[in-house]
Length: 301
Image: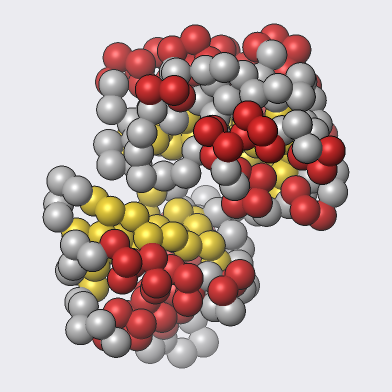
């Protein structure tokens, strides 16, 4: 990786979190490939979702990604899919994040190239979102995904929801996909000591930006049936502007109203070191602390 001039990150989300055989086939294109490094992948059975984190040189990354998309389109039938996480496609969302030697404009350009190729190769309709969006109402992924796979059959026929690439008709098994460029996102979930999904959903409504809560925070309530609890599932879309600890503390405040404890939290996929250092600094009450004091950060300079 140190010899790469440009490093782009991609975090594709696939709608399969239970069948390990299918998961392995989807991940395979990212393994042992020149110019690409698979950093992490995690599958969640309750969400029925696979989140992959991969970095690479833009062209190599594009080639690997298109192969993985092909596997997902072939293997996943959303007519048979159920899970706690909203989804509209076998490959639900593909975000590109510039990391080193490349700009947001280059990430946007790459997202458009990939979107066009997905539509051409697999006849899956593509919506551009976030920084790549072609209209303001398409920037928010939740707005694009609203209606999910089932509702997209009619939604995609509306003039305001014509796809950016591909046919104006939902793929019969693979649905649709959102492709775009964005800042690094932190997928952060807070678990509650209750089985009442209404409580998690109510807290999510209060803490997310669209409900009057934290800027750069998206949230929803999710049921974890196997554990007999619920969670507030959160996406922090810009951790540099809204810190993780603020989301955690606000969930605790709202949960107190119901007499419900916070029993833990989790980060899905990878997280920038700065996001954790910022939170650790807050809870330790550190004064005038900076990333320059982190040993690993100085070694990697």
